[in-house]
Length: 127
Image 1: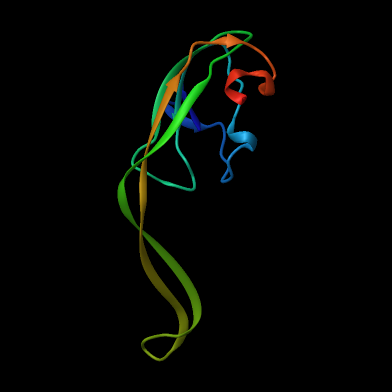
Image 2: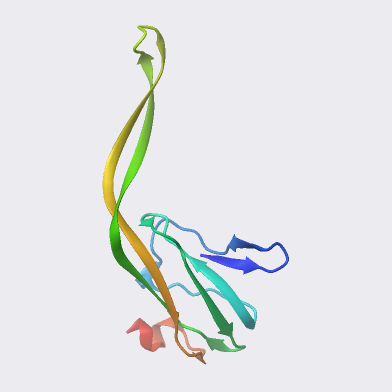
């Protein structure tokens, strides 16, 4: 996930992890005010990241529901390098390129109205 930095005019990472958060719920703290967020996934092929603007209120939580939807297929190239004989018969670095077809996803994000702060386990979305 990235947040838009008005001064630099770019999205800057605020969370990045290959594994999903425990329980599938991620909470991030932002200063009150309008926040522009970009959401993507590291372990999926994404057609384009979701972008959403949320109003963060002091002492409240603004739930954002993120959905992945299959949006077709894509070819993913994987390069592997190894040492050994090359096609010219010399010893060197060999590179193999393999293409695999994989599912491509679209990402959507929808913000719910802000709710009073509670610990994560007591929130309606955690049940």
